Structure formats: C-alpha cells, structure tokens
Amino acid sequence: MSRFAYKGGRLHAEAVDLTDLAAKVGTPTYVYSAATIAANYRAYAEALDGLNIGIHYALKANGNLAIVALLAGLGAGADIVSGGELKRALAAGIPAERIVFSGVGKTREELSAAVVAGVGQINVESEPELQALAEVAEALGRRQKIAFRINPDVDANTHEKISTGKKGDKFGIAHKRARAVFAAAGQLPSIQATGIAVHIGSQLTDLTPFRRAYARLAELVSTLRAEGIAIETLDLGGGIGITYDNEVPPALADYATAIAETVGNLGCKLAIEPGRSIVGSAGVLLTRVIYRKSGEDRDILILDAGMNDLVRPSMYGAYQPILPVAEPAKSAPVGPVDVVGPVCETGDTFARGRALPPIQAGDLVAIGAAGAYGFTMASNYNARPMPAEILVRGQDFEVIRPRQTVEALFADERIPEWMMR
Image (cartoon, rainbow, N blue to C red; front, side, top):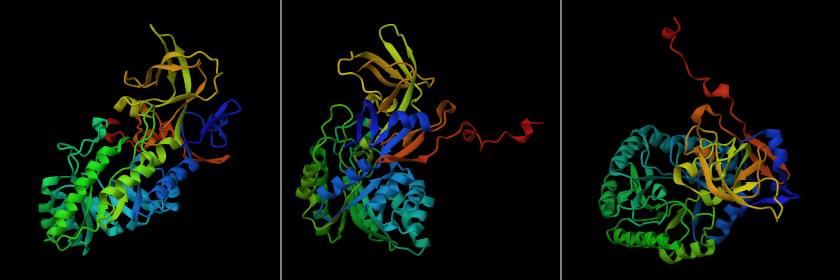
C-alpha cells in the first residue's frame, strides 16, 4: 500500500508536492508517508486478529524515532538487534516488556542493558551466549525470560545475503541441538527458557518456506513438551516481502492462515517481527539529476544521491523503481538509460538500461520502495553528509532528521598534538 501518486502533473507524497518539498529541503532526501506506515501496520493487526500474536516492528528496517514512535502509538512492540536499537526503542516509547532482543553477537554490556531495562524476551542464538546471559542476569539478581532461536534448515528462496535459516548460516542453534540447550537452560537459575524463535530470511514472497519452518517448530514443541519442558511462546520471525518490481507478495490473510494451520493450535503466545513490509512502500528517496551524460551505447543519468544514501542496488543487485517527479506525457517515448550516483565506485549504480521517459539535468526523480533499508544502511562514504528525512501526514510535513552538515562529519575527529609541533 502506497500513497505516492501524481496530482496535477507532479508526484505527491499524500498531499505534499515533492517538487515544492525539494525546493524547501533540498536533495537527496528520504520522504515517508505516515498514512502508509499506519495502514501497513493495521493490515497486519487486522489479518492476525484472534491469533494471540504480538507484532514487533523490526527497527533495523528504519529506526528513525518518529517512525518508531508512530508505530508505538499504534500498539507495536519492537524487534531489536543491538544495544543502540534498545535505546532507540525505549526513547520512542516502546515499553520494555514489548521488546524482543534478537541478534547473533550480543555483548555482555548489551545483555546487561537489556536485563536491567526489563526486555520482555531475549532470543538466545548460541550456547556461549546462554552462558554469558546467565552470568549477567545472576550478577544483577534477575531471572531473564528467553527463547532459543533455532535454525530449522529451511531454504527461504531469497537472496543469499538475507537468507538466515539454512544450515551453515550464522544464525540460531542447530535444530538437532534444541533439546540439549533447553536441558542446559533448565540448570541455570537466572534463566527462564520458555520460548522458541525462528527467522528464515527477508523479502519472502512465497508462503511455502514459512509453512515448512513453522511445521518444524510445531514438531519441536511437541518433542519438548513430551520431555516436560514448558513452551509458552513462539517467535515466528519477519513478515512477508514487498513489491519492488514484479514480485507478488502473498495476501496477509493467507499468511495468517499459514500461521493458524501450523502453530495456531499449540496454545502459545505468538510473535512476528515485520519491518520491510511496514515501512518499505512508505518511503521514497527524492533526488535530482546533476547531469545527463552521453554514453557509448546509452545515456547516463547522474543523480545527487549515491550508494552511500541507498546501498541496496549496489550491495544486493536489488531493483528499485525510479519515477520522474514531473509526470511524463502518456505519449512520451521511453528509452534505456543507466541511473547512477556520484560516488567514486562503478558499483554506485541504481539501474542499468532502465526504460525511462525523457529526463534531463535538473529534473527530480523519486526512487521508490525506499522506506526500508535505505537511510538505516546509509554511510558517509566519500565524505558525503547523510540525507535529510521527512515525515508527511496529509498536507503537512516535518523534518524528522535534518540534513547532516559536512562540518559534522569531522567535528569529533582529532589531529594528534604531536603532529602539530
């Protein structure tokens, strides 16, 4: 669901004209639709109603405080993967008891902060982590509720860099070790192990891998309960994928049915951790063409946004839709162009041979489906300041993160005194 559309010949975010917005705040700039974020969250809540399930927004998709606060107000919990995200979630108003702490490499400092904050569940991903958490919780005089993240060895049929549930992936504990780790946890007085977690990957558009993973969970719950181990919670991992090009994600009603039919009769409190499908379609990267350059076999559009602003096309070979902000005539010819950024890397490319209408230097374009894994993965490579972030609601907009200044890039750096003598 998206609220980016042409009105009066110009692309709008809800009722905000992106041409006017660019004149006021500059480019490159991320623009998010509050109505889209809310609608995407509510679609999950409505589809899953009656399943005794908590929706924990994955901050790694987009952790801006305004967006997390918006979702907190709608009743969302949070899925976090670092101590920094813990502080973000709490600052945005997510109650600690509605926070799930995932991640394969939590430090003792991060574990301590989570225990002190009263995080509702820590998903333990290895036996060394279990031991570290037990020692941390004991030193604090706490008993921490955990789930073990189990690797079900299920191929999610997604990009290899975002597949997380196959044998050999770094995440989780091998399925065959599940009984042993629950037995070990039972000997630790500072640990209360009552849950199982699984996450098989991101950007899934087929329910079959979900069903296979959830069925393995159901089998494991039966095995553990037969041995006297109480399993009260099941964390089912991330949500469904979104449309970037021609993908057709499953209907949320069908996703809910898959959950109900595999684990819905186990009497467990359930949880999911969608991120991309909440914010992905809610954002665009607004950018301006610096030059239109003639290439040997096709022209090249050079944008003022680069791979440091949006890395998905460079890192994953990912497709992102690209729209001219000025609506082209229906009869306008289209032709192949490369769309690139100014960063000094050949990989700084958003599209090759993309069929686009005539776009010239100075024109604005919007890179769509950029609300997830856009700003949150941005960097200062080539000493480029981070872009601004804007949240739109109806005809109003707010700068929810100002554009970084160049001076801020090196404000904290120090030249050793001995070099100045």
